[in-house]
Image 1 (cartoon, one colour):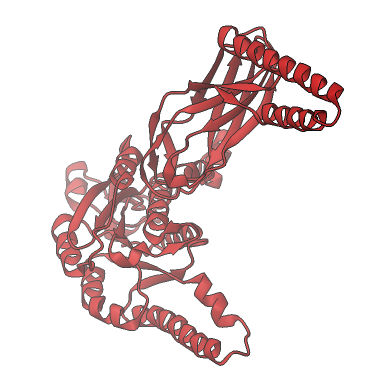
Image 2 (cartoon, one colour):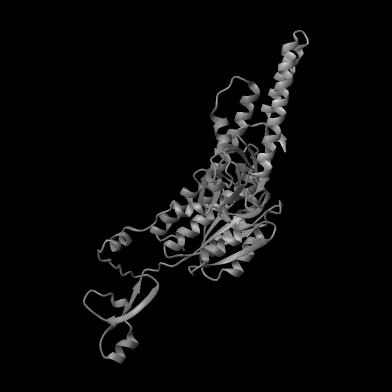
Length: 437
């Protein structure tokens, strides 16, 4: 039981009137009567709350939350008594959210139900634990309130941003035409994948004549090839200490994992095979590229609890592991953080080696806060010195792009805000130009 502010305010008024009653006796008697009435109402209020009031509250949310997105939590309050109650709801949200003011005040009619929705935005992957939902209820008298405990503690898992996948519509124009009843136009290519053998007709490429089949059939037969569409796309995420830099509420590692998940989804929808790998001091995990049912779930489970060892990333281990484990020439998208030329030069031999065996795309990050600071104006001498240093750092990152380009390595220098869009657009551009292998 808790005494509310209304009780103490009434008690203070009675005390003041009683003090003035020392000067005029009728006021003292009036204050004594008021005190007796207030105490009687308090007793009645307590009896109503503890004998009659019945309140239940439920919490419902998805067992899997999406990292970096708004996730909805629903609280349902049920008043099972015949009293009209004023209630205050307090939800014990996970401490990682740093939310300490999630409380709602409302009035609930007898035998009725009310629903309250709110959103949470997790910024790190892993398990998060909700506590109880506490309900502080009082009657219309309002002198006493009673605390009810509801909504048992629950644990939810925060996965990479799977809600972003629902916002992507990558259906090609031809697919939409098929849905409308139009006929699909099949394009016969001349690339590497064999499809079937057919009789030679005027206009076929004589270089594709199958002489053995022609001898058996006693007529010219040619091999028909179609465009090689299914290619292996690997998102390789650096989990070294440099990826722990925070940007827009999340680390570069979490932003990269979200982008890798979206890229895998896009690749599968574009008839390619998607896989992921992670590394830091050691080569940690590898999900082989595939288009099988459930591949996205396997990727999410792999990236769900990927954490850094806060060590220096070993690119020699990455180079060796990719050379042994990836049998086909693949498109490798490396999410990493190069902040200076020195860090690039140390890893450049390994990047060249990976690019010889596979098609490599290096994705690293621009610091938007550093960019804004470099472009700001100030009359302070110390700020001018810091601004020159910031401009030098930004210039080095642009120079990294030029060095990689000179080595024949594709690269993207982007911000966390535009990371997903830039990576997906680069993949679609290179796929359209047949540059993935």
